[in-house]
Length: 343
Image 1 (spheres, rainbow, N blue to C red):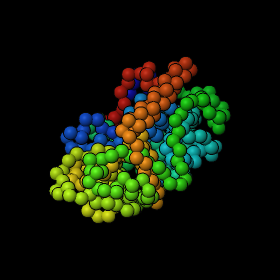
Image 2: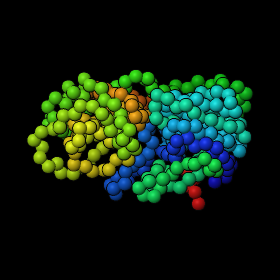
Image 3: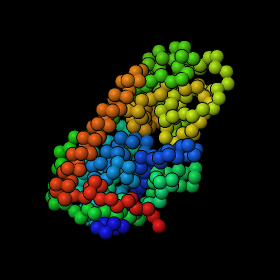
Image 4: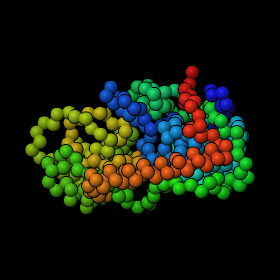
C-alpha cells in the first residue's frame, strides 16, 4: 500500500449473474499462446477508469447482468459505464458515465442492465487482486477465474478521502464523455475485407444486405451468429494461421463466428471479414437475440474512426486530470504507486 493510501474494505452483497475482476488484458502474451483477454467492451472499461482518475489499464469490475450490490467501509469515488442500467446509492438514483462520490457505509446497487451485456465499475485507487502474466483479467483455462461472489470482501487501496458534494443526483463535473449509443433495435457493425473475402463470391452483398442474430452458443471466445453464409470455394486445405480479434470465420457448419478477446490464437477456417477496431466494443456488448447488420468500409475509414475515438478518450483524460489536480482529488498522474496484488 502506498504511503498515502488507505485500505478500504468493500463488502459484496450480491454479485449478479457473473462478476469478475477485469482490465484491458495481457500484453505480450499471445506469442506464448495465451490470449490477451481483457474487457470485452474496452471503451467502457477505459472510460470508467479515466472518470475516477485511474490509468486506463487499472483493474475494474465487469458485471454481466443481474443485481450487483456492495457497501464500502469508507468513502469511495466510483464510476459505472457500459450498458444502460439503474444505479443507486442508499436508494438514491445516480448517473452512469460520470464520477460519483459514495459515502462510507452506503449501499450501492447496480441492476436492470438493458440494451447490452456488460457494465464496468471503476473505483478510484487500486483493487487488490491476483495477476496472471501482468494482468488481472480472467484466464479460466489457466486456473485464473477471477470471479467475484456474494459475501466476498474486496480491498481497495485509495488516496480518496471524500469530497464535499451534498447532492448525489447532480453531476460532479461536466465532462466530454464519449458515451456510445445502445440502440434498442438492430446494430450496425463496420467491417473490412478479410483474406478469403474474394474466395466467397457474393459474401460482400450477403453480409451487407441481411440481418444476423446472436445465438445463445456465444461466449467470451466469440459470437456465434444465425444467418445466411457463403462458404469460400477452391481454397483446399487452409493451413492453420493466426486469427485476430474481430475475425469473421465461416466454419464447416452454416454459421458465422466473430472471434473475441479469448479466442484460440490459430485456426484453419476461412476469414471473410474483420470487424473494425471501433466496432469491437459494441460487439462486446452483444447478448443472445441481438440483431446486427454489417457495413463495409475502407481500411482508411476504419483507421480514421479508431483514431478519432482515441482522440476523444485523450481529451477526456486530459480534462479529468486537470480538474482532479485542481480540486485535490487523487489522480494516477500524480502517483507512481503500482496496482495492488493479493498476497
